[in-house]
Length: 178
Image 1 (cartoon, rainbow, N blue to C red):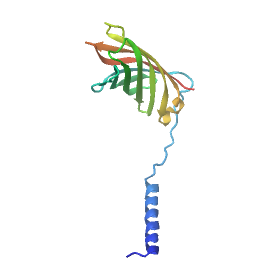
Image 2: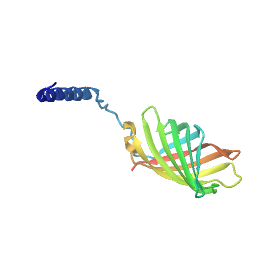
Image 3: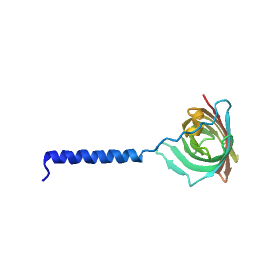
Image 4: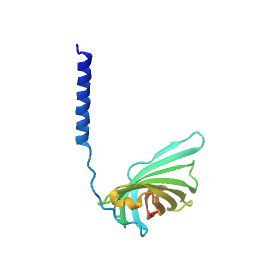
């Protein structure tokens, strides 16, 4: 049986080893030169398509939730890929005019930005196109895009429908550094 003093010594040695190994695993920060994006608006043209089936939940009070993932390309000031999580909460069936929220990530060779936009979704009955007009904020950036942290976002886009189902969104994200 270990004596209390031996146990405490063993415990201190174990904690020291764990602490030292944690320091060895710590990531050393890289020096990254931020891209100067504060002086002019950042304009990103994008086009996305569904990246899986939608999730639709019918609620007992007559409303429904609609969520879908989408992915595609981004071009313009930031060129790369874009992914998005679209979310809507509407009465069932959805009215032609309702609210929409989109969480998005744009990844480029230089890094990434993440943000959201929320606003109006308008799909006139019998039309194959719907429009989105929304505003939001950039919530997270990698070092190269430091100027865009908490920047304002304005989105104007069009959603294409085929046989009553959305097949993709394309439009412009304008980002204004504060």
